[in-house]
Image (cartoon, rainbow, N blue to C red; front, top):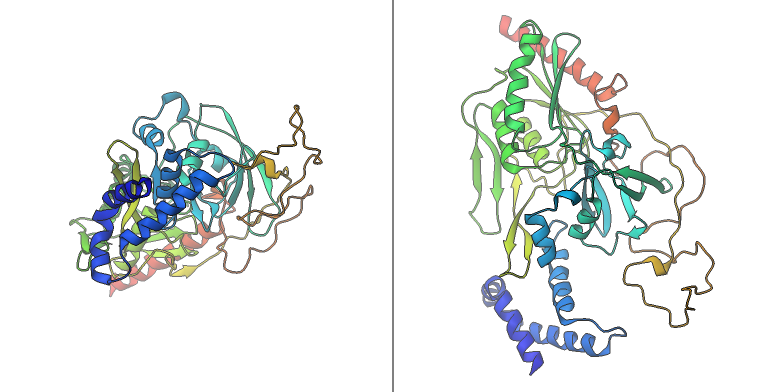
Length: 459
């Protein structure tokens, strides 16, 4: 009887999503699959070595369904959903890290400019193995994001790895400040450099202001603009569309596609270019992600700008938050955007017109080891003495983790060449400095574009 009740409850939950595809495909019915779930549910309830509550089992099952889809689709229980809607003021300070799950590993998309993570020279592509000595590979994205938040000035310890280097431990203090998304300055007296580090409600207006202001600073002798989108992890979709629209006079900005055939929505630019057609070189790298890729793709496809740097991150998912009748919510990927010409970004990234890699490499240090007992949900040893000691030597480690982490060693060596297929990135603290080779190259390209356009106009 209990099996039937469980199956019926899940049928009611899942019917809107699965009934129609099942009818079309003619595969084994959803009822049979839900009976299978009910049987597994009962066996776990009665035979698991440690008792597990029904609510936890159901929530874990829903989370597992979503985790199997893509990194951005997750289940938020009631507590997590409430925290998302009304974050606690004293627990919302951030390290500035934007992260994603990639094949079970916690991967850094990019650190936000001006954040503690950026000041610590954490780079896009770095992998985080532990947060405060707790492994990340068995945690959901909402859990991880919540652990990275906390009281202002509180400290969080991360063990991370870059490329094939040995793991290092980094300590970050959380900051309650607002991280800037737009900054600008003059380069060499006649080139406008604009750093676009993210997208929020204030970004489009700030971008238009600096684009209009820079020619005045140059005495109306501006050669063009360098738009720096490196280590930009994205942000507000609407703000990114408006930012791209400010620089594009006509045509599409992006095309949004859902699962239904013929559902493509074209987002068109409105007339007007705040930069008045002046040449633009856009800097991109593996930390140029999500909404930043939307802007880069729109400028590249409209031939409004030249992309310079390395391939972008490759994520164009659009997630929708769907409440579940007072029992939390699901964040589900419901659409993806492609470039105006129809190029897919998801899993591929955007290739720059001119490939220029950074040259600077970092060094690595040491980190602590973990034991199996430190892992979340580890089984308790019945032979443990009252003091909690099992006789295992201090510092013993498990044979391995699903994240594939190698055991840290206590030494420091120069970083090796990034593994084949990895995209080299630049630390946020090096962006826009005198040692920034990509920026220097962009300035040279911009001068060449200005010279070529001047000759064309003279003809």
